[in-house]
Image (cartoon, rainbow, N blue to C red; front, side):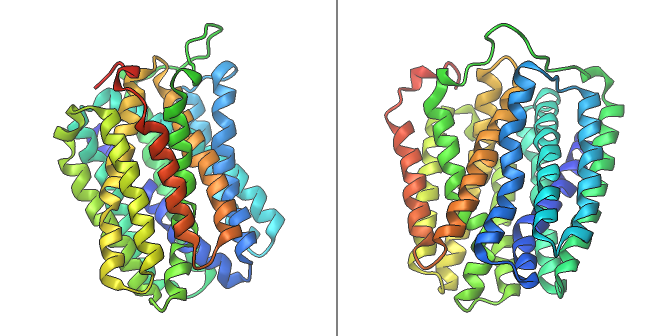
Length: 366
């Protein structure tokens, strides 16, 4: 199961790399404005936000639902090709794509946390970082037309769907449904500061995920060098995934606070020194904390806090990467300019202060 999960992460996050690094550039090459790019890239996160509410009371996240999501994801990604020049068609395809993505990763994360221990989970997850970095370096050299990004997005998503299917049929022992219940067994308000911090953290990533490539190339950094900046951050992320096991035995809430604060510092560096390669590389090294350690700490904490574990992972992606990603894309599209990352830093800092005064006793796990 370790290798099937690792392969899923490898191709899934290779697809994410295409979507995050090169799809915004492809949209710019087609002729979309920064506001239009922000709207288009907000569609997928928006669906990630709404989808978990359906599973709260009405749907169950089981193997059949997961396979259906893989099918929808594959169909949607193929439709990117004909829809690319047409704003409303592309927006619709992004909505379908986001709906499918809102199911696939939470299902796999829950399956991984159930079958692997914390240290082994990190080592499986690092294959996702490898997929991300390989596609960043390769496509940074190969991207010539907007459709080049579409070809690679289609290929990586289709292979992801194949490995997701293999996981379902190979792991009958863990086949189950995270079924809805009439009982109040899932309460977001019980830990509202945590969920608010998740939201603000991802809003602050709006400028990075949607406009980092555009921002750096506008400040004189070549597209190929920018792909190396992306890749360096992911190398640091891989190292953290491999060695983070002992850290996860510490107090998880404290680790979460540190990673959010470091993220605010990271955005300040990008704002103050946008054309300095050494400092930008230094800022990218902080991806080890602001993504890798933050992500694993967050999902591990939620896995321990909530009985409906798959739903907790869905809401984590829905509220942070979904609502936060949606708001972050819209905000970044509106404020794009020299002060983009200064504002993003303030947003991350707000999330830090919301958690800073929370007592660790509020959370029953370490």
